[in-house]
Image 1: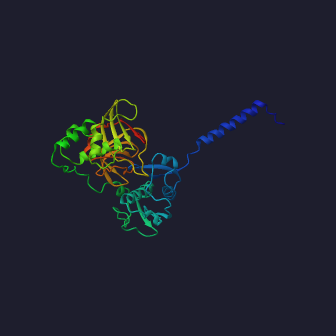
Image 2: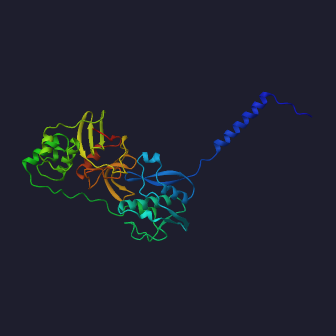
Image 3: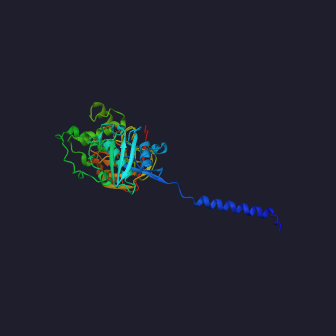
Length: 362
Protein backbone atom coordinates (compact mmCIF):
# COMPACT_ATOMS: atom_id res chain seq x y z
CA UNK A 1 0.00 0.00 0.00
CA UNK A 2 1.42 3.36 -0.99
CA UNK A 3 1.85 5.70 1.99
CA UNK A 4 -0.30 8.81 1.88
CA UNK A 5 1.58 12.05 1.09
CA UNK A 6 1.93 14.43 4.03
CA UNK A 7 0.41 17.88 3.74
CA UNK A 8 2.13 21.14 4.69
CA UNK A 9 0.54 21.19 8.15
CA UNK A 10 1.82 17.73 8.96
CA UNK A 11 5.33 18.61 7.84
CA UNK A 12 5.24 21.77 9.96
CA UNK A 13 4.07 19.80 13.02
CA UNK A 14 6.93 17.34 12.64
CA UNK A 15 9.44 20.19 12.30
CA UNK A 16 8.12 21.90 15.43
CA UNK A 17 8.34 18.65 17.35
CA UNK A 18 11.99 18.28 16.35
CA UNK A 19 12.74 21.85 17.45
CA UNK A 20 11.02 21.31 20.80
CA UNK A 21 12.91 18.08 21.42
CA UNK A 22 16.20 19.76 20.49
CA UNK A 23 15.46 22.71 22.75
CA UNK A 24 14.59 20.38 25.59
CA UNK A 25 17.82 18.49 25.12
CA UNK A 26 19.83 21.74 25.15
CA UNK A 27 18.08 22.96 28.31
CA UNK A 28 18.78 19.66 30.04
CA UNK A 29 22.51 19.82 29.29
CA UNK A 30 24.47 20.13 32.56
CA UNK A 31 26.57 23.27 33.16
CA UNK A 32 30.25 23.09 32.37
CA UNK A 33 32.27 21.98 35.44
CA UNK A 34 34.33 24.58 37.27
CA UNK A 35 36.97 24.81 39.97
CA UNK A 36 37.46 27.63 42.48
CA UNK A 37 40.72 29.49 43.05
CA UNK A 38 41.67 31.72 45.99
CA UNK A 39 42.42 35.31 45.00
CA UNK A 40 42.68 38.49 47.07
CA UNK A 41 40.62 41.62 47.56
CA UNK A 42 41.81 44.04 50.17
CA UNK A 43 42.91 42.17 53.27
CA UNK A 44 40.77 39.09 52.60
CA UNK A 45 40.29 36.18 50.22
CA UNK A 46 37.76 35.87 47.43
CA UNK A 47 37.09 32.75 45.37
CA UNK A 48 36.79 32.87 41.58
CA UNK A 49 35.41 30.13 39.35
CA UNK A 50 37.42 28.77 36.44
CA UNK A 51 36.68 26.00 33.89
CA UNK A 52 38.05 22.62 34.93
CA UNK A 53 37.62 19.58 37.13
CA UNK A 54 41.06 18.65 38.44
CA UNK A 55 43.49 20.00 40.98
CA UNK A 56 45.96 20.59 38.17
CA UNK A 57 43.49 22.79 36.32
CA UNK A 58 42.79 24.72 39.54
CA UNK A 59 46.47 25.37 40.26
CA UNK A 60 47.11 26.42 36.65
CA UNK A 61 44.19 28.85 36.88
CA UNK A 62 45.51 30.18 40.21
CA UNK A 63 48.94 30.81 38.72
CA UNK A 64 47.32 32.65 35.78
CA UNK A 65 45.90 35.21 38.21
CA UNK A 66 42.80 37.43 37.99
CA UNK A 67 40.97 38.11 34.75
CA UNK A 68 40.82 41.67 33.39
CA UNK A 69 37.27 42.01 34.70
CA UNK A 70 38.34 40.82 38.16
CA UNK A 71 41.34 43.15 38.17
CA UNK A 72 38.97 46.02 37.40
CA UNK A 73 37.17 45.11 40.64
CA UNK A 74 40.49 45.34 42.52
CA UNK A 75 40.85 41.55 42.80
CA UNK A 76 44.54 40.70 42.94
CA UNK A 77 47.04 37.95 43.66
CA UNK A 78 50.39 37.81 45.44
CA UNK A 79 51.65 34.96 43.27
CA UNK A 80 54.25 36.35 40.84
CA UNK A 81 53.36 36.32 37.15
CA UNK A 82 55.12 33.59 35.23
CA UNK A 83 55.38 31.12 38.14
CA UNK A 84 55.78 27.69 36.52
CA UNK A 85 53.87 24.58 37.53
CA UNK A 86 56.30 21.65 37.47
CA UNK A 87 53.94 18.98 38.71
CA UNK A 88 50.85 18.07 40.76
CA UNK A 89 50.07 14.75 42.44
CA UNK A 90 47.69 13.51 45.13
CA UNK A 91 48.33 10.47 47.32
CA UNK A 92 46.70 9.47 50.59
CA UNK A 93 45.08 12.89 50.99
CA UNK A 94 48.33 14.80 50.43
CA UNK A 95 48.59 17.06 47.38
CA UNK A 96 52.17 17.71 46.31
CA UNK A 97 52.52 20.88 44.24
CA UNK A 98 55.90 21.54 42.67
CA UNK A 99 56.48 25.12 41.50
CA UNK A 100 59.22 27.10 39.81
CA UNK A 101 61.49 29.27 41.95
CA UNK A 102 59.60 32.42 40.96
CA UNK A 103 57.11 31.58 43.71
CA UNK A 104 59.76 32.50 46.30
CA UNK A 105 60.80 35.81 44.70
CA UNK A 106 60.41 38.77 47.04
CA UNK A 107 61.37 39.57 50.59
CA UNK A 108 58.15 40.82 52.18
CA UNK A 109 56.89 38.23 54.64
CA UNK A 110 53.28 39.32 54.17
CA UNK A 111 53.44 38.63 50.41
CA UNK A 112 55.01 35.21 50.89
CA UNK A 113 52.39 34.32 53.51
CA UNK A 114 49.58 35.27 51.12
CA UNK A 115 51.03 33.05 48.37
CA UNK A 116 51.06 29.99 50.60
CA UNK A 117 47.52 30.76 51.76
CA UNK A 118 46.23 31.07 48.18
CA UNK A 119 47.78 27.75 47.15
CA UNK A 120 46.67 25.77 50.20
CA UNK A 121 43.09 27.07 50.18
CA UNK A 122 42.75 26.44 46.45
CA UNK A 123 43.99 22.86 46.79
CA UNK A 124 42.03 21.91 49.91
CA UNK A 125 38.72 22.77 48.26
CA UNK A 126 39.02 19.34 46.64
CA UNK A 127 37.45 16.70 48.94
CA UNK A 128 40.33 14.26 48.48
CA UNK A 129 42.95 16.83 49.53
CA UNK A 130 43.49 17.26 53.28
CA UNK A 131 47.12 18.32 53.25
CA UNK A 132 49.28 20.33 50.84
CA UNK A 133 52.98 19.83 50.35
CA UNK A 134 54.63 22.69 48.46
CA UNK A 135 57.93 22.18 46.65
CA UNK A 136 60.13 24.71 44.88
CA UNK A 137 62.00 23.14 41.94
CA UNK A 138 61.49 19.71 43.49
CA UNK A 139 62.73 20.60 46.99
CA UNK A 140 61.09 21.59 50.28
CA UNK A 141 61.40 25.39 50.65
CA UNK A 142 62.71 25.44 54.22
CA UNK A 143 62.73 28.92 55.71
CA UNK A 144 61.54 30.66 52.56
CA UNK A 145 58.01 31.28 53.81
CA UNK A 146 58.07 32.89 57.29
CA UNK A 147 55.40 31.61 59.67
CA UNK A 148 55.02 28.23 57.96
CA UNK A 149 56.88 25.01 58.74
CA UNK A 150 57.00 23.73 55.17
CA UNK A 151 58.87 20.52 56.02
CA UNK A 152 55.40 19.18 56.90
CA UNK A 153 52.32 19.26 54.68
CA UNK A 154 49.98 22.16 55.47
CA UNK A 155 46.24 22.07 56.16
CA UNK A 156 43.58 24.71 55.62
CA UNK A 157 43.61 25.34 59.36
CA UNK A 158 47.34 26.12 59.26
CA UNK A 159 46.71 29.08 56.96
CA UNK A 160 43.41 30.35 58.35
CA UNK A 161 43.52 29.95 62.13
CA UNK A 162 45.30 32.78 63.98
CA UNK A 163 48.60 31.58 65.39
CA UNK A 164 49.11 34.70 67.50
CA UNK A 165 46.89 36.16 70.23
CA UNK A 166 44.62 39.14 69.55
CA UNK A 167 46.30 42.50 70.03
CA UNK A 168 46.36 43.95 73.52
CA UNK A 169 44.89 47.40 74.12
CA UNK A 170 47.46 50.03 73.16
CA UNK A 171 49.65 51.48 75.86
CA UNK A 172 48.99 55.07 76.91
CA UNK A 173 50.42 57.51 74.43
CA UNK A 174 53.63 59.30 75.24
CA UNK A 175 52.77 62.99 75.50
CA UNK A 176 54.77 66.06 76.34
CA UNK A 177 54.13 68.77 78.91
CA UNK A 178 51.06 70.93 78.35
CA UNK A 179 51.42 74.42 76.94
CA UNK A 180 49.12 77.25 75.94
CA UNK A 181 50.43 77.17 72.35
CA UNK A 182 49.65 73.47 71.95
CA UNK A 183 46.18 73.94 73.45
CA UNK A 184 45.44 76.78 71.01
CA UNK A 185 46.59 74.58 68.12
CA UNK A 186 44.45 71.65 69.30
CA UNK A 187 41.42 73.87 69.80
CA UNK A 188 41.73 75.22 66.26
CA UNK A 189 42.00 71.66 64.93
CA UNK A 190 38.98 70.54 66.98
CA UNK A 191 36.90 73.52 65.86
CA UNK A 192 37.48 72.43 62.25
CA UNK A 193 36.81 68.74 62.82
CA UNK A 194 40.37 67.38 62.82
CA UNK A 195 40.25 66.42 66.51
CA UNK A 196 37.55 65.79 69.10
CA UNK A 197 36.92 68.29 71.87
CA UNK A 198 38.00 65.62 74.38
CA UNK A 199 41.47 65.54 72.80
CA UNK A 200 42.15 69.20 73.58
CA UNK A 201 44.46 68.96 76.60
CA UNK A 202 47.45 71.11 75.66
CA UNK A 203 49.80 68.13 75.52
CA UNK A 204 51.70 67.39 72.30
CA UNK A 205 51.57 63.78 71.12
CA UNK A 206 50.69 61.44 68.26
CA UNK A 207 47.01 62.43 68.21
CA UNK A 208 47.90 66.05 67.63
CA UNK A 209 50.51 65.14 65.03
CA UNK A 210 47.98 62.99 63.15
CA UNK A 211 45.44 65.84 63.23
CA UNK A 212 48.04 68.24 61.85
CA UNK A 213 48.84 65.77 59.06
CA UNK A 214 45.14 65.52 58.25
CA UNK A 215 44.87 69.31 58.00
CA UNK A 216 47.98 69.44 55.80
CA UNK A 217 46.47 66.78 53.54
CA UNK A 218 43.24 68.75 53.26
CA UNK A 219 44.96 72.02 52.34
CA UNK A 220 47.72 70.55 50.17
CA UNK A 221 50.60 71.47 52.47
CA UNK A 222 53.60 69.21 53.08
CA UNK A 223 52.56 66.17 55.11
CA UNK A 224 55.18 66.30 57.85
CA UNK A 225 52.91 66.69 60.91
CA UNK A 226 54.82 69.77 62.08
CA UNK A 227 52.69 72.80 62.91
CA UNK A 228 55.15 75.35 61.59
CA UNK A 229 54.36 78.97 60.71
CA UNK A 230 52.84 78.14 57.30
CA UNK A 231 50.63 75.39 58.72
CA UNK A 232 49.48 77.49 61.66
CA UNK A 233 48.72 80.50 59.45
CA UNK A 234 46.68 78.32 57.07
CA UNK A 235 44.88 76.63 59.97
CA UNK A 236 43.79 79.81 61.77
CA UNK A 237 42.63 81.31 58.46
CA UNK A 238 40.63 78.22 57.48
CA UNK A 239 37.08 77.04 58.09
CA UNK A 240 35.62 73.57 58.67
CA UNK A 241 35.81 71.37 55.53
CA UNK A 242 32.61 70.64 53.60
CA UNK A 243 31.55 67.39 51.89
CA UNK A 244 32.92 66.72 48.42
CA UNK A 245 29.79 65.16 46.95
CA UNK A 246 26.13 65.96 47.44
CA UNK A 247 24.29 63.75 49.88
CA UNK A 248 22.09 63.53 52.90
CA UNK A 249 22.15 61.63 56.14
CA UNK A 250 25.09 60.05 57.91
CA UNK A 251 27.83 58.85 55.55
CA UNK A 252 31.60 58.62 54.97
CA UNK A 253 33.66 59.92 52.06
CA UNK A 254 37.16 58.51 51.49
CA UNK A 255 39.42 60.84 49.47
CA UNK A 256 42.19 58.83 47.83
CA UNK A 257 44.14 61.83 46.55
CA UNK A 258 44.23 63.43 49.99
CA UNK A 259 44.33 60.22 52.07
CA UNK A 260 41.48 61.40 54.28
CA UNK A 261 38.13 60.09 55.47
CA UNK A 262 35.32 62.60 56.00
CA UNK A 263 32.58 61.55 58.41
CA UNK A 264 29.52 63.55 57.45
CA UNK A 265 25.96 64.32 58.48
CA UNK A 266 23.87 66.10 55.87
CA UNK A 267 25.87 69.08 54.57
CA UNK A 268 28.23 69.06 57.57
CA UNK A 269 31.59 67.33 58.09
CA UNK A 270 31.67 65.87 61.60
CA UNK A 271 35.27 64.64 61.55
CA UNK A 272 38.24 64.59 59.22
CA UNK A 273 40.38 61.48 59.78
CA UNK A 274 43.97 60.88 58.78
CA UNK A 275 43.98 57.51 56.91
CA UNK A 276 46.11 55.43 54.57
CA UNK A 277 44.49 53.58 51.66
CA UNK A 278 45.70 50.98 49.13
CA UNK A 279 49.21 51.26 47.75
CA UNK A 280 50.01 50.89 44.02
CA UNK A 281 48.82 47.51 42.81
CA UNK A 282 46.32 47.29 45.70
CA UNK A 283 44.33 50.48 45.15
CA UNK A 284 41.19 50.96 47.21
CA UNK A 285 38.28 50.67 44.75
CA UNK A 286 36.40 53.86 43.95
CA UNK A 287 32.60 53.95 43.93
CA UNK A 288 29.56 53.98 46.20
CA UNK A 289 29.27 51.22 48.82
CA UNK A 290 27.70 50.44 52.18
CA UNK A 291 29.09 48.90 55.35
CA UNK A 292 27.92 45.27 55.32
CA UNK A 293 30.03 43.51 57.96
CA UNK A 294 31.62 44.56 61.24
CA UNK A 295 34.15 42.74 63.42
CA UNK A 296 35.82 44.14 66.50
CA UNK A 297 38.71 41.71 65.97
CA UNK A 298 38.94 40.74 62.34
CA UNK A 299 41.65 38.41 61.05
CA UNK A 300 43.32 38.92 57.68
CA UNK A 301 43.60 35.39 56.30
CA UNK A 302 46.19 36.00 53.56
CA UNK A 303 48.38 38.44 55.51
CA UNK A 304 48.11 36.84 58.98
CA UNK A 305 47.46 40.02 60.93
CA UNK A 306 44.73 41.25 63.26
CA UNK A 307 42.54 44.09 61.99
CA UNK A 308 40.81 45.58 65.06
CA UNK A 309 37.59 47.59 64.73
CA UNK A 310 36.98 46.50 61.13
CA UNK A 311 33.98 47.81 59.14
CA UNK A 312 33.86 46.12 55.71
CA UNK A 313 32.25 48.09 52.89
CA UNK A 314 33.29 46.21 49.71
CA UNK A 315 34.70 42.67 49.40
CA UNK A 316 37.64 42.31 51.80
CA UNK A 317 38.12 46.10 52.05
CA UNK A 318 37.41 47.71 55.42
CA UNK A 319 38.13 50.61 57.72
CA UNK A 320 40.30 49.19 60.50
CA UNK A 321 42.82 50.10 63.15
CA UNK A 322 46.47 49.76 62.20
CA UNK A 323 49.62 50.76 64.10
CA UNK A 324 51.27 52.31 61.03
CA UNK A 325 49.31 55.02 59.18
CA UNK A 326 51.84 56.85 56.98
CA UNK A 327 50.87 60.00 55.06
CA UNK A 328 50.73 58.11 51.75
CA UNK A 329 48.94 54.98 50.43
CA UNK A 330 50.31 51.89 52.18
CA UNK A 331 47.66 49.16 52.62
CA UNK A 332 46.50 46.16 50.58
CA UNK A 333 43.30 48.02 49.74
CA UNK A 334 41.79 48.65 53.16
CA UNK A 335 41.53 52.05 54.84
CA UNK A 336 43.94 52.17 57.77
CA UNK A 337 42.82 54.31 60.71
CA UNK A 338 45.01 55.42 63.66
CA UNK A 339 44.32 53.53 66.88
CA UNK A 340 42.97 56.62 68.68
CA UNK A 341 40.28 57.11 65.99
CA UNK A 342 39.52 53.48 65.02
CA UNK A 343 37.01 52.63 67.75
CA UNK A 344 35.27 56.00 67.32
CA UNK A 345 34.88 55.40 63.57
CA UNK A 346 33.69 51.83 64.22
CA UNK A 347 30.89 53.20 66.39
CA UNK A 348 30.03 55.80 63.74
CA UNK A 349 29.63 53.29 60.89
CA UNK A 350 26.78 50.86 61.65
CA UNK A 351 25.68 48.30 59.07
CA UNK A 352 24.28 50.09 56.04
CA UNK A 353 26.33 53.29 56.42
CA UNK A 354 26.99 54.72 52.92
CA UNK A 355 30.67 54.93 51.96
CA UNK A 356 31.83 56.78 48.86
CA UNK A 357 35.44 56.35 47.74
CA UNK A 358 36.56 59.28 45.57
CA UNK A 359 39.70 59.24 43.43
CA UNK A 360 40.02 62.99 42.80
CA UNK A 361 38.54 65.44 45.28
CA UNK A 362 40.08 68.72 44.13
